[in-house]
Image (cartoon, rainbow, N blue to C red):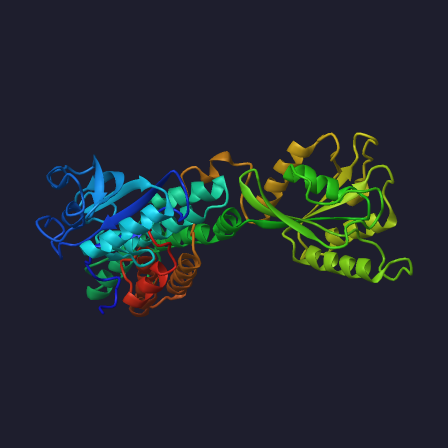
Length: 485
């Protein structure tokens, strides 16, 4: 039996919607016809499907970007469907392609897939449709990777950044930077090929004799590469989110605040200190940032003889979670007031810069107005888990604090409007490698040794967009995609 491969022109089929019962399901078909993508006479997705379609001539003559209503059938009718037709090269894959919208029952989908296999289709490999889009010049690698980013987006900001990459924002920036380096490399090589009497460096550009020609362009490229690298933490924040931990003394109202933010009762709330014995985690989106919110056991001195073994272990786990958090919300009980333990915790966060940022909350603000703490820096943030007072402002403050810690500037509303940084580890590593190479070239004074690092930088940028790549890299990348994408 022939082993499927990403480089084949086989007609392929896959379920593009989640399996299970639903109103509708979408089956995606593409390929066939060999290397001539316009060969629709035999063996393409359209001609093969026509053998199973109740109106074969209508399907065969359907123009691109049109739909045909009919039935999928073998010896008997299988299902009533809408077939969307896409003609090469104006399709997602660049090949003849078809989308079948059918009823979403499991038995229906299985029966249609079995019929398609009998007609000559094979099951698509993970990401094979997007792989073909790349190979046929429909998408560069940054856009290909953004497809999976969109599928996996956990928040609206993650979706927005993935859309910017899909629309070509990152590709355009990488290409512009690469062109700056290519111009610099060309000037350096021309200068080496001719004598100093024949070629002179432009004084107006600030170039110095013996140094890198086109230095200003290389410096601009380096600056733009560093901006891309600096945006990585922000991009990861929007894509992967952050761990936000609620901490504080027992009975400060952490669990009530946890439940209010989630808009559901997940944590048990009582007036008995130490009710929460272990941490509880839940996912939510705050101002477009995916957050893992953790409610922890109340922090107090574990050496106290009044503590049971279970509560002591819970407190130790809470301390461990605080150490790994991206942001700590420290809750003070407004009725009890500020204790020495509260002051000690706040001061520890102020003095140890390695610790995650901390927002100190004055809970039960509906019962007791917050005091000012000038010696502790920022004033306490008043909230009420009972009435909801201050919760909207707290959500905005959490988002701003996380963005600031990730290197973003939440005050600049237009910061993300038209830009997009690296969306994957692969892109970030290649940008870092390009930065190293450009820095090396700028440090060199001998013209005959600056070309290799500049070429390395250009090659790194070419790998990001897929101009330079290997079969192993492509197979590894696309095998992580969904089947049907």
